Length: 178
Image 1 (cartoon, helix red, strand yellow):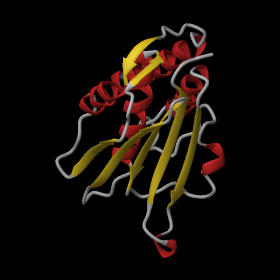
Image 2 (spheres, one colour; image 1 turned 45 degrees about the horizontal axis):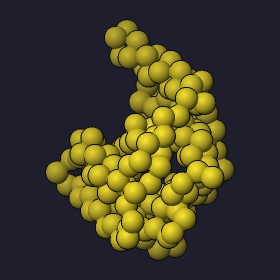
Image 3 (tube, one colour; image 1 turned 180 degrees about the vertical axis):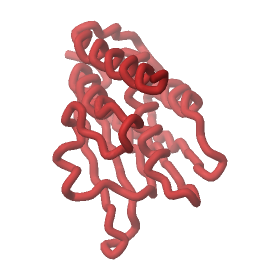
Image 4 (tube, helix red, strand yellow; image 1 turned 180 degrees about the horizontal axis):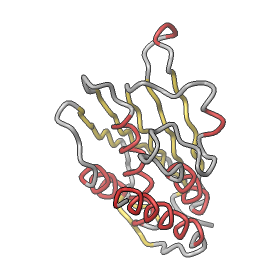
């Protein structure tokens, strides 16, 4: 009962976040500090290594710090959960231009099947065991990225015959809202 109550709490919290989507608190943020905070917010098993490769020339960006931490911690947690028991690697690569910041979250986990790719951002869709996932993580991420006038895309391979398995999420957003 307690476990299901916690799950309901997560679902309601996610729905409230979804409903609050017009409340964005934009501030000037150092993208490198935001990424370091996001990484340190995720509990990592000892057999999973996360590397941050920031090639950003101008780290200042105008966004909602807390919402973007939620985006990157959720993506990192998903990447950790996609890893085989033996462990794996997650690379966070950050690049920029004069106008935008681009973040790549690259893992060598099990990948996402072709059948599931079109459903990733659909609310309540989950591949996790019953009681483990709400199916709101990626839809919330999508909503937050769109509120920042950004884009999110995903490439994945779940078939070892076709090459190394893994997933890359690419998130881009403008440095400044115009």
